[in-house]
Image (cartoon, rainbow, N blue to C red):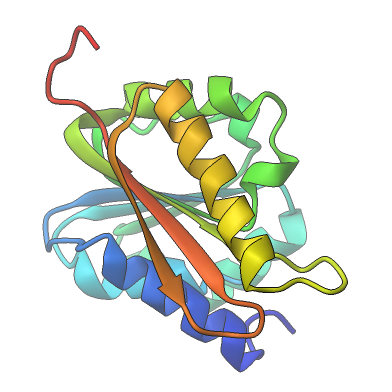
Length: 184
């Protein structure tokens, strides 16, 4: 159902485009759902690695079917895991994406600090929010974006910026960078 909804597909493809993934990048999506963004990452990181974790075994199966060829080629790796118990990804990551999932994380600032340690210096993160509460408006999205920006800043990320996709309600993507100074 989520993969078929045009707004979900559009939101995920848009978020992937904002991360400017390069062919050799190593990327992670947290809460990948049906695997739409995973497939878009695999199309971009043609010589890299795409990792995904989702807490739902059903979503892992669905995303695995959608990305079967890339999994067979060992470019996509999906795991049934939660953000508080991430598997090892080996070398540092270049980019991380989380769409509509941060609100479900226990202690999100601490999770973001952990994710920051997984990123290479100057690595990128994108947190996406499309508020789904009854009566959500542009103002609801603006408030959600500000909350995400504040969390990223508290977790030590820098150069935050917000991009907005004009859907109903609007979608906010808060992008940030892992500082290049490793002592930060």
